[in-house]
Length: 430
Ligand SMILES: C[S@@+](CC[C@H](N)C(=O)[O-])C[C@H]1O[C@@H](n2cnc3c(N)ncnc32)[C@H](O)[C@@H]1O
Image (cartoon, rainbow, N blue to C red; front, side, top):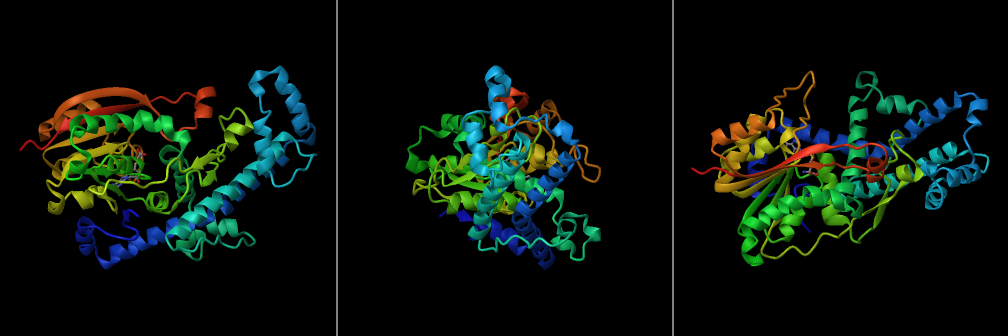
């Protein structure tokens, strides 16, 4: 339905593509295939992690293991201690996910079995995503020691390309959490805190225009993730382009934007992979339904596209100079290795008098990485550099915010306060 670079292209990316060498195209293909392999290996990897937990648990002496209560005992303990409540729907959830109901299992063993059931549910969702782009979602056949070959260090593998690194699997798990933020009812508050101030700012600037005229305005959203913010802006009638360079995000946003047909069509269990900081089993196993809304109904006067590739490469040159009326960077500028370069590209892409709306923290992604460049300016410094480039700051606010948070955990056990900065600046007044 929506233009997506995995299947279609736009003028700007045609220009960028034409300049790509055969080697760059081959490298891109390799990264793409690697992400598919990571999605397909999800269940094998997750089950291997569970096997390790089971084996560690087996090392605890049986005398001590017997201290863990059965379901029945836990229910009676729960009624006397509110902080250990697992009863009611929590147990029903475990029963629905644990493949067997072995009554000799204690609650910890039952939880491990339920997590394994939830892994299967997640794997079904990921397979649908892979299938949606015409790729084969078949997981690798597990063989003796296959985990070592599949997930071990590349230098030990026969086929180095076939190795899936732990960091690849992190990306698969974070894609699941990203679905909560962008495409679930459970992510509503986070979207309200993060995307809504941006939508308000756009509305304040151009909301007085009739919807059919808004399509003449062009909005760019670099680092668009799963595309919800870009989609919401397009739905208001603005011609919007999301840009993203991660194939994990692109494959997933393609699925959300083009393939899912029904509201709440899928259940996923995004929180199962962390056994830390969890109060009760139901918090860890909680299903989240995807999507909260089926993308559709963009005004016919607006265009919506997602463009794959690096923000700097695509928008930093002359073909994209003075092209965009609004540039929205949401949780994006701290992905820069060189923040000066991001500011230059934002300036380059904006039309004279165009508006930069930035919302997000300065939690620099590459800080502390030994082999990566990373220049971490603080907010005052970012603003000073932007002002010298010619940006005129109009509005500034600071607010607490969250990113792909599990509300159950945050409310009860940890409080993560991430400060995000909302900046609205008029740029390019040349
Ligand atoms: C922290 S996430 C934020 C995603 C989304 N804007 C949101 O608020 O949920 C940053 C995103 O920027 C993407 N990204 C990072 N560097 C990029 C670059 N140079 N070009 C395009 N996308 C990039 C990442 O892949 C990631 O999806």
